[in-house]
Length: 113
Image 1 (cartoon, rainbow, N blue to C red):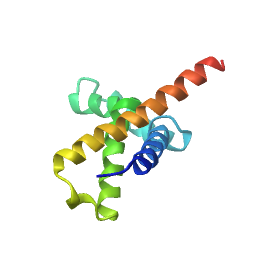
Image 2 (image 1 turned 30 degrees about the vertical axis):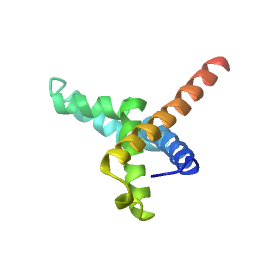
Image 3 (image 1 turned 90 degrees about the vertical axis):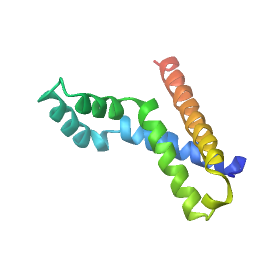
């Protein structure tokens, strides 16, 4: 099981990676390709799901947090030290903390406008 410091580290990494994937201009060309692909067939459920995923910080943050947690657990040799259910709860904790950071950032950004 991860400790509080690892949870904080993974939450900050998840927050930043989510911002990169959803908002940062460096990935605008990649997002533009997906939006263009969707615009050619807007009735496609798969294409609509892809657009939702890449434009929603909560959706993208969930999967990014899971990938970061899995990578962390595997690299540090902690994956087999706890039941899978415990890792599922850790996933919720990491994703929830990352989303909290995102909400704080959104709120502070609105206050500054």
